[in-house]
Amino acid sequence: MTDEEQQTHPTISKTEIPDSENTPLSLTFRLEEPKDYREVEELTREAFWNGFQPGANEHYILHKLRQHPDYLPDLSFLAISHEVCPDTGEVKEVIVGSIAYSKSKVIPLTEDRETLETVTFGPISVHPSYKRRGVGTAMMQHTANIAKEKGYPAIVIYGDPNYYSRVGFRLGEGFDMRNPKNKYAVALQVMILQNDLPLQRLSGRYKESPAFDEFDQVEFEAFDASFPEKVKKSGLATQARFQFLISLVYPPIKAFHWVK
Image (cartoon, rainbow, N blue to C red):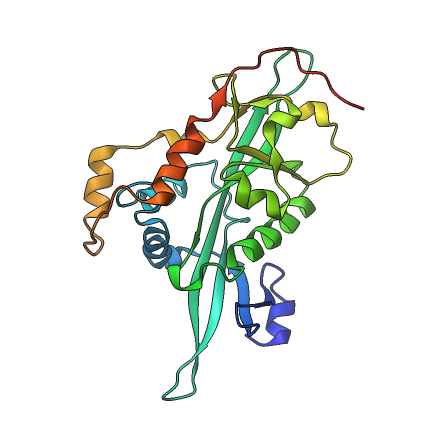
């Protein structure tokens, strides 16, 4: 894509990030299109395989999410790397990352406040060959800027705070944000997008899209069978970390007090 073409497509942008050897990695971000769906599902499966559990189901979750009215295609981007073929010198575009967004909300604890409409990303996927090279961070920064421009007040996710705190997320508990069962969760995190957002509006029960609850095991197994067979592994450190994080859920033990 030429610079002139890029200027006529505001949803497309370019960036360069250094890899571990300080060699710039050239990326283009563009919106996902229906023609990309299968390739992105394959990427998502590879990215999550044996990460949080033996095998993966995130590619099925993404497949179902796109069919739900809460899916936000105008925030769901791909990261494209530009690879040079050593034989021909031809530059080929390769999808190396994907981030999908959906609607979410924070339901207030009292009736004197309105529900806060937020957004959530996930699955966010980076091809294993490109992990730890800044692709995920670049996708989050790119889409967060667009979400801010669109007027969304905050991004709320479940994730590892050791990672997401480095890109601007803060623990939901610090804003009296709770999970749907009215409990604090260490994995529940928020990125504030609007400087004028009253922080008290973040207090409440976070609810992600019902799309994430619509998991049909039989349908999933049939869907997954259409992908290449892979070996499932258990007992991995990443799986133990995931189980540990989701176990860190606890009820509020005293009234929350805002510090001015």
